[in-house]
Image 1 (spheres, helix red, strand yellow):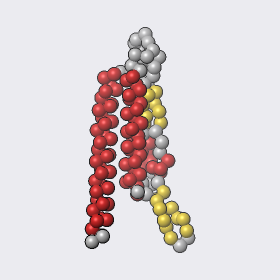
Image 2 (spheres, rainbow, N blue to C red):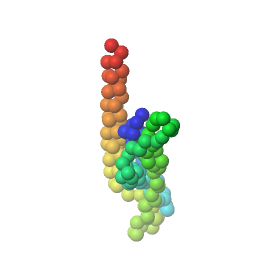
Image 3 (cartoon, rainbow, N blue to C red):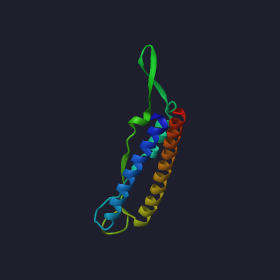
Image 4 (tube, rainbow, N blue to C red):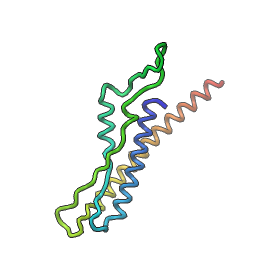
Length: 133
């Protein structure tokens, strides 16, 4: 799928995971001692892409190069637990308004990645159709 495809796949996987965590946070907004959880994936992606560029060739045979090896393949989200607020008796760290804002932002980012992926698929489809003529 190439480096861009791998990046889009990782972004969409992250956005799906983030959506599930935000939903769980909202569902537990009234649960005593519940700590809101999020993932830090974007920071890890930025770091992976900074390391010596995003593409590196991997030699599989002395006579040729095949495939790409990237730090993106190993990037995994890290769960971040939010500390409870200093006020309140239930020690719940969910802020429903903040979670709804995160949900809206996450949805927009997912839709953007999906549109980019859709465009790539349409381009590939067009190239295949044109080469078959």
